[in-house]
Structure formats: C-alpha cells, structure tokens
Length: 243
Image (cartoon, rainbow, N blue to C red; front, side, top):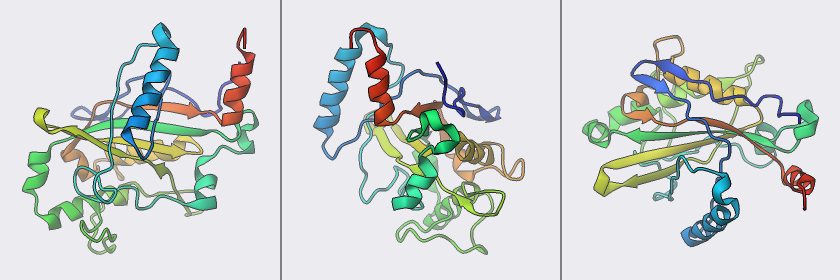
C-alpha cells in the first residue's frame, strides 16, 4: 500500500568518532503515564499480544528528573510549541492527505560521560548548552557560543521563521552500572527539521562547528518512524483478516 510521503530509513550524520548512527526498527512503542506501573502493565500486555511476531532490539525505561531536567542538570523541552502551534508543527496536514493527522518521530539514545561533564564549571556547562542552568534562561547572543546546543538546534524556514519540533526527551540510567543517558524523542510534521538539527549538531553549521555537547554525549541508536493517527490505526485494524 501507499507509504507516508516523507518516511525513509534514518539518515546517519557525522564523522568517525562523532556519529548519529542508524539502528533500524519496524515498530516504536512510546509509552508514557504519570505512574510507572501503568506503563509497565501496558508494555506487558502489548508484548503478549505481539508474541513471536516481533524481536525487541532496545527497551529503555525513562523517568521524570526533578523539574523536567535532563540527567546533565538542565531543563529539557523549554522551547516546545504549545496549543495550536504544537499541532501546526507536528501534525501532517493535507500535504499528504492519506496520512493526515499523523506525525513523524525521530528517536536517539544518548549516553553521557558524567565524570567529564561534572568537571566543567557551571558557567562552562551553560556555554555548552546556551542556557543558564538554574533559571533556564537563554544566554544572550553576545554570550552564547555558535557551537552551543541551543544555537545549533534552532531551525528556520526559507522566510526566516523558526520551525519547531515537539521534544519528549526522557532521562534514563543505572548508577550502579555507570550508565547515564537521555532518550531523545522528537515529533515533527516532517523529518526535515529533525534531520537539519542532527546535521547542524554532528556535522556543524558551518561544517566543523559541531555541537559542543557531543564532546560529552554519544549517540548509540537512531530511528525514524511514522506515527499514524488513531483513525488510521482503526482503519488498518479493520483491514486485517478476521477483524
């Protein structure tokens, strides 16, 4: 059958030693709730229903960390669009009528070198991110380096208007194993702004001016998926034999 117009395998970006790798999958289950037990129960039921028809290649249990902060201590998702703007930036419209109401989601699993990160002063960390750590205020243009994370993840269209994505990043980790990470989850109306962000981060804008955060963070997975609308999911279910 037809495919979503912009769906394609995850595109790798970067150079040796600083790569956004592709680790393909067919199905992504993004489960979230206020209570962990609800997520666990739904995941369990889904695994029973899917049975031997799938092979799980990655499973990450994230958690809320203080006041919506990432493992590295900065507030995450500050620039997310809200309300009607969020819908406009994330939901496919009549540009792909058969898949209207859906969205694209790009996911990556990052591991952080916390010992190296914690050796930086707070001021140095703020220049890596481009925001203040405690108050979560964007640094002014004179102070914010061009290779800061926030500088390189701003995307504009041909008219100079900013194109937003909706982040739902989750911290994860196992202190006993020395594992500290961020599971990046970005929703958008098209993969293009997500891929431009990765290109800016891993290749640089201009080339070589890469995201300083990548000196402390390593991407270990990467996948791009289409998220069907609830209506399309029901329609697909109705098409199945015996439904």
